[in-house]
Image 1: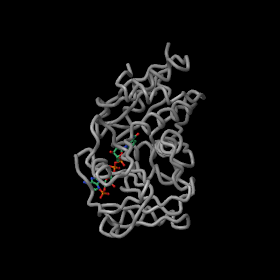
Image 2: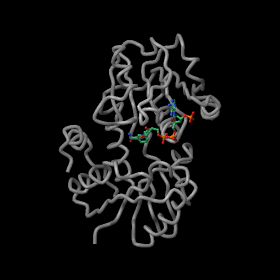
Image 3: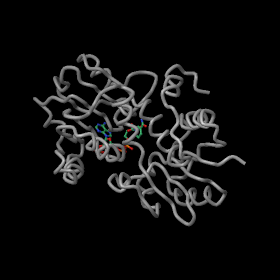
Length: 272
Ligand code: NDP
């Protein structure tokens, strides 16, 4: 019998994760079955328990359950502890281990796949939700000169930045970005899902900057179009998606799949 894993969330129908993990399983020779699990909005814990009782080995967790997954875990990694959000659950004897691979996936995509070192860069992180919180510690570990968190609800940006104040982190609203420039701008808001663009000033992107949207899709998001118009280099979140999945696979299976060929297949539309 294959070892069972799944992506749990609401909605989950759109997700590429089952295709990505099927590719990882083929590549590594691991006997793994990875499915989608749609949980009712008020039934996350029950759905996790049922999956576990049926022999499930682990879960990836997506919107809107990452905070609940953190609370449900009985043991956390340091990065999950900092993010207070969990996207990977591993079922162990009598325990549930919770980790957060989003930030590691983001940083690896930026540094390894896109060849953009974060050290000494001025970083703007847009958003203060689950994805931004997961990204913050792995970003800071790469020693940027500064990380500014901008958020629509300004208090949330301040609250998040306060925790990392000593590592050069500050929080603000979008109106405070006028006359500032950044080398790396990461959109960790969900604005792109609604086809919206946060209110960014012109001249935000420094020469040779990288502009990254965690959202991915066939067309560039309004945010990436805005950056492209201003001459910035752009990237969407498809590489992050695959890198965070590889990090989860490593936690569950003890081996890290080769992501380069999976990214190439996803972009070519040949991931089966
Ligand atoms: P959350 O719901 O936790 O947070 C949403 C954030 O977006 C909040 O900071 C919110 O601000 C902000 N926001 C929402 N709408 C707007 C808007 N119109 N203008 C400005 N800000 C806005 O979502 P997540 O953090 O979990 O996800 C964020 C994004 O990251 C999603 O697009 C998701 O798909 C993507 N993601 C991609 C991954 C990948 O592997 N590529 C992995 C994880 C996430 P406020 O606080 O004011 O409400």
